[in-house]
Each structure stands twice: as C-alpha cells, then as structure tokens.
Length: 339
Image 1 (tube, rainbow, N blue to C red):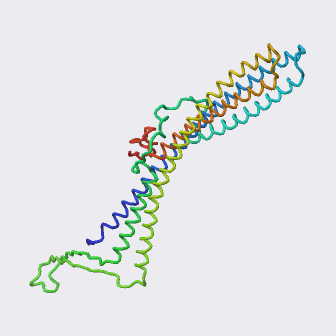
Image 2 (cartoon, rainbow, N blue to C red; image 1 turned 180 degrees about the vertical axis):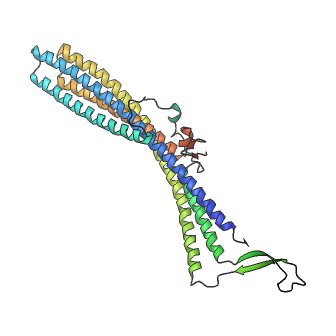
Image 3 (cartoon, rainbow, N blue to C red; image 1 turned 90 degrees about the horizontal axis):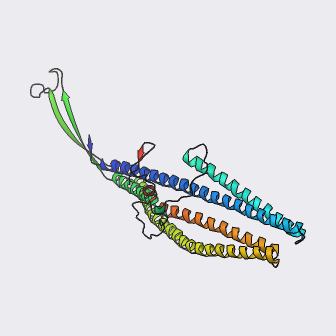
C-alpha cells in the first residue's frame, strides 16, 4: 500500500533526531565548560595557598624582629602579642584556602574520572585569553540555540501532522491473485493469475472536535517553540555581553591592583627601616602594610581567576567550546562530534 501522507512521519522523525543531536552538543559543551572551570578554580586556589604560606613566612619574620627588640628592651610586649594575633589570622586564612583547594581538586577529579588530582600547572592557553573580545554570535554554533531550533522544527512537524490528519488519505492498494486450479469464477475467460489495483480514499468526517483540538495544540506548541528560539538567542547574546563587560572592568582593576601591590611593597621597606633603625615607626604600621600587601595579592589572584572563568563563559556562549578544546570530529563514547 502506498499512502499520500508518508512524508509527515519522516519529517517528525528527522526533527526528533536533530533535537537529540543538539541536546548531545549541549551536554558536551556543558561538561567541557564545567570541567575547565573546575581546573581554573584549582589553579586559583593553588596560588592562594602559596600566597598564604608566604604571608605566614613574612609575619613570622616580623615576629622574630619584634621578639628581638622586646628582648633588647626597645619595644613592649604588646608588639609580640599583636604579631602573634596576625599570625593566627594568617594561619586561619591558609586553612580556609587549603580546604577550598581540596574541594575543587575533588570536583576536578570527578569531572575527569580520576581517583585524585595533585598539583597542576598554572598555565592558561594563550588562545583563550581573548575569548571575550567578540560581539558576534553564530547561532549555528550555539548548542542551546540549535536545540531550540530543533524543538521548533519538531513542533512544526507535529502541526503538519495534525493538519494532515484532517485531510483525506489516498492510498493505492495493488493485488495479485493466482488460482491453483480451474475451479474459479469465469475460469473459461480469465487467467489463473489476475491483477487488480484499488484506490482507497479515507477521511475523518467527525471526531467530536478532537482533530481541531490537536491542531490548535500543535499550533500553540509551535508558537511556544518559536519564542524559545528567540529566548535562547537573546540569552546567549546577553550572557556574552555581560561576561565581556565584566572582563573589561576586571582588566582595568588588574592594573590598579598591580600598582597597589608595587606601592605597598615600597611602603613596607620604608616602614620596616623606620621601625628597626630609627624607631620612629610603630609595629602596628608595619603589620598593617604587610596585611594590605597580601590582601592586594589575594584580590589580584582572585581577579585573574575570575578573568579566566569569564573567558570560558564567552567560549560557551558563542558555541566555540568544542573548537577551543579540539573536540570537533572526535568520537566521545561512540558519538562523533560534528562542527
């Protein structure tokens, strides 16, 4: 039997396959982004732990100077107590950053499927540093937009099917009959093998409004899916612009923070000289400038980590995550990733 409605089921099947393929791309991009983001966090907390240890060493050095001056009668016991208090605070900061580092290492190991993750390089691919310096989004590369398009195509196929159900179905039914003996009607004039073809026309006349309701529901689904496409496009562009603007602001903040660090280090040298040689600078000023230096270094490192994360966000929102990590045309769990 050959039916006149056969293209409609094929269109629905193709739309469903396209949607599943787009969903696979969404999952691949999301896993790649989250795994890379976890790695960036591990890099950042490794640096924060190292800075915390350096802060402890610097405060212990100042504590040694305070103890020496106290033993010589050049300063009071309060200087030693103040320094010890700062050391305890720095130890608490180190413990906090170490705990965060361990947590992100465990998260990265989960994404990679490894038992554990040790120290990793702090390098960041130079090709990813300028990922946010773009204002164009190719919808053909963004998985979320592709998934929305596929859903709209599937909704359109469902509407076509609903419309087709209200039209007549014309089918051609060929038939071949072969008799084994001569005992059949009109055997003297008809051959044993007889051929016939039937044309059948079938159309639903009334089903209580069910067909109209199905068509209206399919039309509303298509309208919702079309709105979903526009929403996915807007969301991708909005997130890209937000990440790009934040990255621009952080780049400017980095320059200020680097100048603050340089000025703080110059001030530290001056204050320590005034404290040790001239005795004109109280220890509290030395401790405060030391704290300001390391607070600036902490903020500087956190800013750099945030900048790297934003580059990954821009890659994800422009659909270039797979290309950046060379995943195109590679098989992942038996599925080849197409660009």
